[in-house]
Length: 273
Image 1 (tube, rainbow, N blue to C red):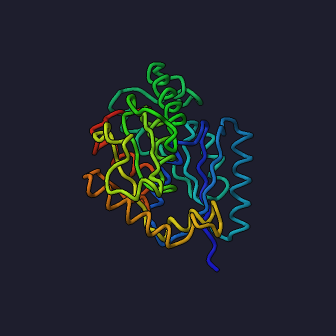
Image 2: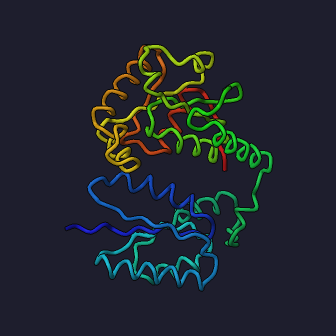
Image 3: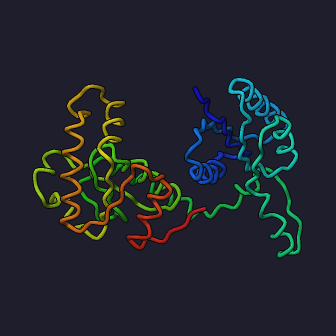
């Protein structure tokens, strides 16, 4: 049996940047199976040494050289990680030297400095968007007047994680509406959605993948039966097509790619840092 290649996202902060960049890189190599792990807040030599120990252990267990995607700004911490023997991918390294030449100044590698560059208006907009996504999840909302986008699709098609990503990374107020069996008996949009047609974006998924996801959630239920999945997906796609709602399959698409397509299609251009 082929063992997964261990991958670590290491950061002196949350690790979201390292993980996002690393994930985008790894998706280019579909023939390799990766086992990923995030190590956050590695902001001292001691923590870096501890992380290096975990990385060495992974190498011993799998018999394969680990890959480390690092967003640690302190080069000394990166050197400690490199002592583990892993392949180190420093996400900042390709950009620092060109920026130093262009700006005429040297970088100041102070841990946590990036987190001080906070636009509080942007921050609050992101938090408000997150609260909106949580209170308008799974069709529980009675009104969508304040929504920037409403994701529509069958249950477990990827609507909730996409809404959360849109809120956290782009400050977009995203709601989602799961199409129920009752909704799918008709070829028209549910009444609650019709006034908001311009905000709608459909998500669909291959029935086989949907069945796997539902089986993990409610094993051996009617909800997870292949026949149910096929029928719901076919009905939902027919409705969205008839109503001319832009739609994307989430089967082989990352959340980052889904969010980008939603923003571009609906003309929502909000960038968060």
